[in-house]
Length: 360
Image (cartoon, rainbow, N blue to C red):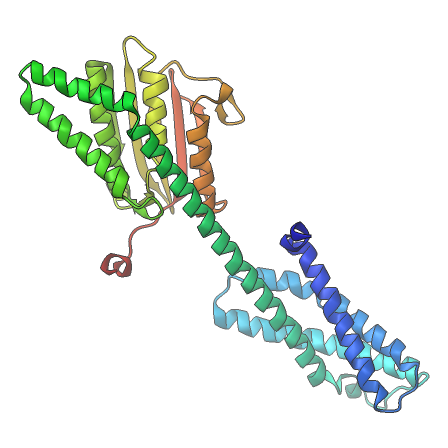
């Protein structure tokens, strides 16, 4: 039953039919107090059926004007409602004259439209109910998207925390710092401690629900990569190609982490000679394009994901977060890098922080 009401198409037909059935019932009850013949119920039924048919096209017209400017949408609504009301009035008068008055015809053709005002108010009421229900459904849909995005963000944060608090990760990092101390490279060891502290602070205290400027995400990714660079030394090469116009673009918090982590795990750590990780970003029209590529051994891709689920959890989670935040206005594509390796491309709408948001 819940699935039935969640289907907006089915719900429309149910409410649409019930609404016109209710109109027919109320109209017939009203006729009982006017001492009309019982045959009047046929006229009422035909009137309701004509209204049921004529308002169906309004649904598709209103879908087209839904995103118009308010004044254009209101003006179009009134014009459409008036046009449908006029046509419906002709049908109603014809039914009444033909069935109830046995073929009566008026002297003037203008009498065909003599009850247009009544019809206009009925169609206007139908239109108001349609927009009211559609607006309510849109609010519920946006609320659901917000809740989904929040859940995915918290899920990403929990996975990040699990990784950061992984004893193996901390052991490798602290062991590298200890080695630097034994080698009397205290300055480098101190820098490593600062990077580790900043990295953990960013991950622990940055709200994953909010979008942040790309430069902040790059800063966090760089902290992580610099920590890993101590482990891999010259085996890890990091290349950045960031368009200046993309620095302030808003991106989901922690969106780069699973991509960089996969590149380290599957492209750098698996090769004796190490590898390169390339992070690029640029503004392209109204979109922001982000690319994370490596020159590792690559993977066999199945349905856009690595075969066997390698890196699949982080990638699936990232795709679901993007879907929750941007609906269908995004893309996440995995391709083979040339001449070797794997490349992840993300396209999202280009957004920047407004003055109001900054002041808030």
